[in-house]
Image 1 (tube, rainbow over the protein chains, first blue to last red):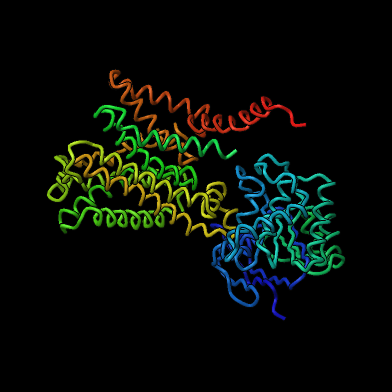
Image 2: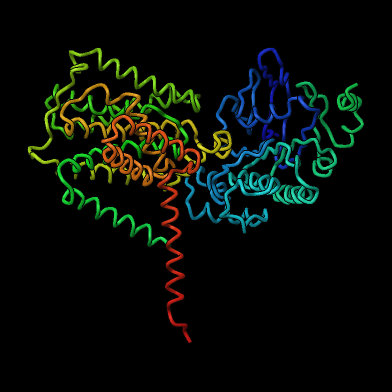
Length: 238
Length: 320
């Protein structure tokens, strides 16, 4: 079966530092995958390559079997690859609704009426409907994370990469994000989630991919990965 | 709510039409020059205020448009409107080229690059005196046979209305939303599917084309073109106009141009001290009203709408 997205021998160097080395990694349709690893293990660099924000030095990225490496981020977005960022990236001085409308109207053949209706549906789903006229910068940190998720949903993505969605959010909001991701996954969406919050990520995902020093060191079910000696070594720093 | 701005714009349009009949020849010329600067300031506001592309090259494009149209008309003996359209097209294409070259440049780097473009152009015009007349200037035939400035004034007003209409439609459309998204966060805009490269080039091309249009008007109006039109000093004046008015709003940038030009003339008796006054005004604006002094005043006018509505409803007898 063709993977929804696949990294084939991806490598990226920044000067003399190898950020990602020979990464092989495939995500199937409707999967919910966790991508974990200690700080500096190359998780965000991997996401940046798989969403078009960085071009790999070598290797391929296959999206539904077609090579897409080197394409710009907007072309990845147009092909249904959505993402959120480690540090929330919003259009701060634009309203919540305008933040949602940008991806809605960037889609080909979209209309203002349809985009607005879709935006309001997503805002309702995320519990942000009452805030649609507020500037994005006036939202709390957690609400900004939700808005960023909503903005990615406006692309009607076939796969969503969430980069540290639980970082800096309170336990209530963390549970809310887990609930929302589960609901979206149940609707048939595919997710790759990067986070340090192992407790949260273990509650959520079916499969874990572990990276250390730019390389994949484990890939399997949560139980299998938890007992993996190399993973324990990477996390304990031994 | 929307009635007040429309009423204000209608009042402004009536005033603009009546203005040349209310003042003497000197202030008529000042008014025409103010409209010319208003077009340039609005084009700069589109680039900087909406799309966040800090260009220092608008007066370079004015210069290109002015010399381009004048030389095309002289060399090819074509009617002025055709020369005008051709020069605007040249400015648009060159602007798109600069937009493409500057794709990876941000903030000060972009400003320095565009300033260098203007300076290179100014020096080329200065040096190629056999073609451009150099420092001695290039004489341009008048566009109208009238001895008064009236036709120029109304032509400038029509060009301002046209360019504001075009840019206004753009910023009110989805393109305007994309420009603002790029201004706010390019990375997020790309992740949201906005074709960042295409829209950055587009806004550069249109901003340059509009500045070139202002230049094509300036050439026959002023009668003699000198390379100084594209100087950094002139660009500083345009920046001051847009910043004092409000660079994130096209009407505010236009009003800023009128305000600064009028004040500049009114303070003529103070000689070079005028520049000090303007510098101070610019500093105060940047410190206390980053969206512009006139944009701040405009916001207060907009707030008057609901206040007047409330006052009217209080005065009205209660319905039984």
